[in-house]
Length: 124
Image 1 (cartoon, rainbow, N blue to C red):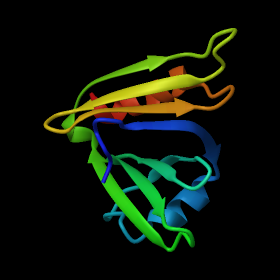
Image 2 (image 1 turned 90 degrees about the vertical axis):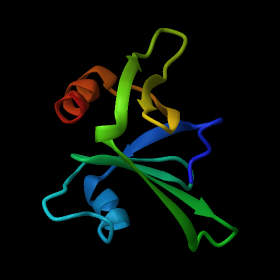
Image 3 (image 1 turned 90 degrees about the horizontal axis):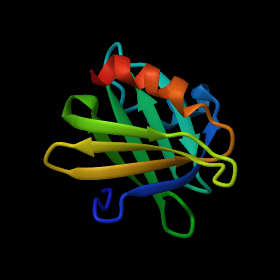
Image 4 (image 1 turned 120 degrees about the vertical axis):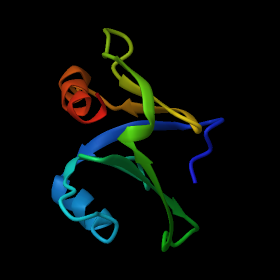
């Protein structure tokens, strides 16, 4: 489960959507599609058209995994911050009703404004 007191996913880099689908295929409901997928060194964050799924890889071998599903229907507010000259990372903040705040920090030249438009279709 995500620790909402320290809920930050740092340095997410985009990965192939097919890899994201493979990682969460057993969790998807009928008609649900993956819209983007990201990875840190070991963990993954998958954005579908219905929710955010975080995968926390645990242990030395990485066979134990924690899956947390955060439905867009529980998002009360969201914010994006684009990359700057010195700060090259962009950020997405989501506030979930009854749960708290989660921050996603995207590595490099990720177009967070375009991603915000896509997510807005599902959140608003």
